[in-house]
Length: 273
Image (cartoon, rainbow, N blue to C red):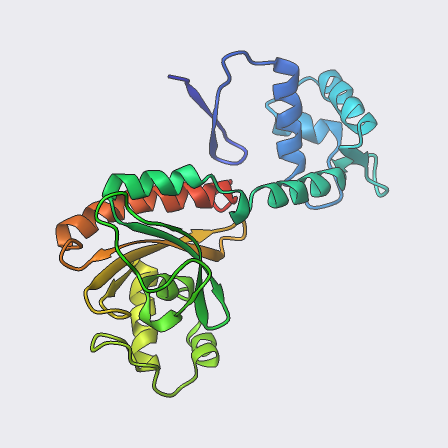
């Protein structure tokens, strides 16, 4: 088991490598400090004080190398150093590399296999939920009437309610209107104000339940996936026949679903720093 160390500068815990390269570690520490300065840059003396009196000559040599490779530049105001636009360019590459289309499908397969229920990955398109990935259980498949790429109403699905759970009430009203929503079963929430109350509950507890609101005999639990801006960009659900989706099973699924959605959110950058 690797030990861990805490950088006091940011109060975050970082794995200690098995084979540390001290010069590289010092360079990364300098980059961390520069990433939090106001914009005018920091001088070598200031960096030394911030880094537990790291030697000024060491800092100078590292800064010289980072400058030569275009990662650091001198501020025009003072003889200070600051991060260059190169980090912005790299950050955009990270965003492109880590998106929903690159999610490892094995993660969803493992969730399906563990609970032997249907797993859906969905996004919001205006006032609808669109399923972008659907995995049926190997045993006892649920013959759902909607396939991948088809649309479901936001208000009548666990996926949909999760996807709009962090919207302000005014945004929900603008999106869905202020009148009566379509009634699909006797359990469907058809009043927008009641839906807004439900969304508050979902926001507080971190998950949504579809208790036969879209289709009688079918129940579902869903949780959000967030991106680097901590915005909900997708949702994952586990769906099955209500007869199987009892309180005990939903509680069990909630634990596994929480791990999967958090891992995917971390992959998209939601919990960095």
